Image (cartoon, rainbow over all chains, first blue to last red; front, top):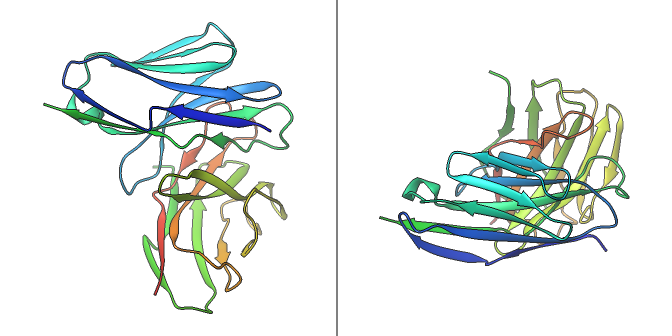
Length: 112
Length: 113
């Protein structure tokens, strides 16, 4: 069964304290791995797509990396405005259509 | 500006009622999706549609129905058969390949009263 597991469930950081969020996946064949940011009461906002092991993408203080079994979202020198829930999702080769399988998310809180 | 519009933002349903959640997109995307989000559960797929007049069940389709009569619109009906409908409902769309991810609407929060 295709599955996505995110850890930790919640993470509290001080402003400027760098850390990483983990997304482990089990799929029969990975077509793509996606990272989203979701603010409370709003829809998720697209951040990155990764397709193959070794690929990396960056956006401001965020950097996403991909291996054959997991992805990391590295947050460098976070600011309070980075506080949100970060969602990881995968698209599997054996899955009909384009539907994504989502993890449960990591809720990040950054205090000043 | 292009995007996805969900309405209403808040919806209250009485026991035994059917309610319909609206989702409209002007991105010219082929595929549209409905997800349900519960605290601690993540996003779970209800239905999706890749072309007009065609749709497929997701993991939790029981108690829900959809239609796709127009490319721009993908309404979701929560029927009285759905025993625990209180949740945050998210609509999304993507191009055929979804390589650039989904674009999500702002969500509808449904509460049973």
